[in-house]
Amino acid sequence: MHKLIDTPMDQKNIGLAKILYGLRQDLDIYCLISANVKKIKERGIGKSFFGHLQLLAFRSITLNICKIFEEEKGYELNSIPGVCHHLITETPTILNDAKLRDFIQKYHGPSDFGSPISELQLTIDGFRDKFKVELDRFKEFRDKYIAHSEYGIAIETLPSYDVMENLFFFGADFYDLISAAFVAVGPCDLRTERKVKIGLKRLLQEHGLEAIKTNME
Image: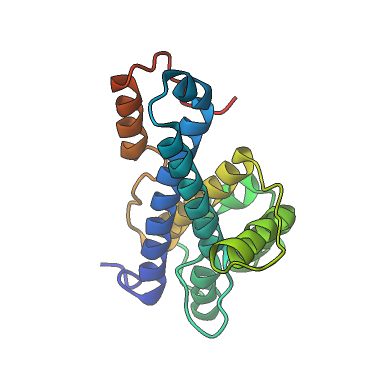
């Protein structure tokens, strides 16, 4: 058994995977309703219900995205920065260098900058900088609208579904990387576990919807 199994870093990465799994299901709910909203209204199959479900999914998407990228400040988190804290302080052995290099290359990180852990951290920092505006907008929506009800706040636009998916896939790739390159365990496939999407699509079909769209266009 590898020494990192069941360590705080491993447990945080598992916690991160659970958040990502929930985010994937929320994205699928939001996508299916949004892509088929016209047909739902035309069929009259509870548009108020589906509209409310769509809003709940979006709120959950916002919360989960914030959790995934949240910095540790005084307490430990099952977030990407939370996992990275252990990579930096413990400098574990890299068991799959190719996996690490592929991740850094995919997300346009530095090469031959110094230590692989430093290159990974710079890659993560670069991705977060790329989506800083969008992440800040999610955080503002969470803080001022979901967690609290701040007087006079009117948030008119939020990041697109494409941005949400990009943030999910980065998180899923990071989870895969930690599992394979540092803990030496096979990660669960967060991309194909779509039971909620399958169930919601079947429900819409049972209520007479045909040619259901499964992706945003």
